[in-house]
Image (tube, rainbow, N blue to C red):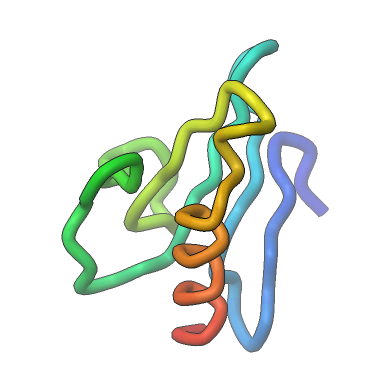
Amino acid sequence: PKKAYVSLRRNKQFAILQPSTKTRLDIGLNLRDVEPQGRLEAAGSWNSMCSHRIRATDLKDIDAEVVKWLKMAYENS
């Protein structure tokens, strides 16, 4: 169990959901060999499990693009 974030797992962890501030949810994705583009940014030192991150500050930020990246991470896990 983790107190700081929720792990999304299939065979292995493919994403995390982390409330980083009062107004922002960070979605960490394990997408090795994928170039950062658009809102999909390199995770850097944010979380060692994740290669990429998406910052969401509004419910509208969770759109088809985010779902696409989540599906890709799920399928690759």
